[in-house]
Length: 316
Ligand code: BMA
Image 1 (tube, protein in one colour):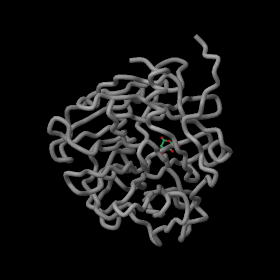
Image 2 (cartoon, rainbow, N blue to C red):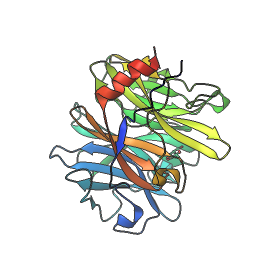
Image 3 (cartoon, protein in one colour):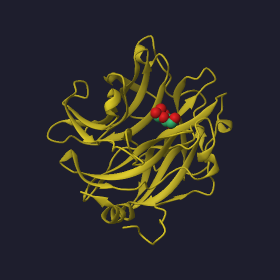
Image 4 (cartoon, helix red, strand yellow):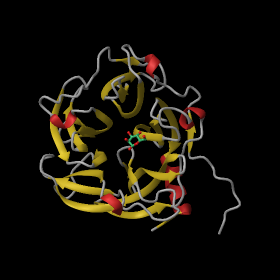
């Protein structure tokens, strides 16, 4: 049945958007987008931004702010630069980081896309301070991207969500396990792309790292709609069982956030909102996203509102 109510927006865009652009950078860059995000122990918001240079290659650069909105202090030099000599998988750059603090290690795990000769794969690095990084190398071979680690082990294993490409069968979200972050197995399909006319048909992928709620892992994921004028990247929501993160217990029907503002509609790749991170203040979620593969923007929502929306707009 068609609802008579208008769609209530679940995310409010910040009036300062875009909050970070290439022109803010202390060194020459082409574009700044798709940042991972975390709140450091001292309350600082850290964004690990994907920065594209004028060769077309990406590296990662940290920007820190006391209020998460302005006053950004950006590293004078790239924070994590591709290292193809020691890590050939990084030959053509590193992209789209997702940050998870892993209590057991006392470290942040950064899952990012390493663009190798064989295509994009998933790499992991550990850091305590976002100044020194220990690379673990490629943990999922090409083509695979859109990965994040869960903050703790489940059933004895670390858990990685990721999105392998499986030729014409579509691109779906998978969950894998590892005892040591190096050897991965127990691969399970978690969220298949839908088919036909759906907004999330054929290609989905994890957006920011899953959010633990009393009802399960709240997963914000992107769906890619192919249209006559290119791809449309929008954000949906699904809930997964706390102790079995491959088990979807509820999936929203429509998208909850999509390109509408001019800086999301137009840019290097128009019609893209691409969140890779958030910070939380109680129930409030501050979502940091790349807009049109060009700049960084911020939108705020409420976890309980998203869960309530899932109850009214989803299926089991
Ligand atoms: C995806 C990723 C993102 C990018 C998006 C839109 O495949 O590569 O980095 O933002 O496409 O171009």
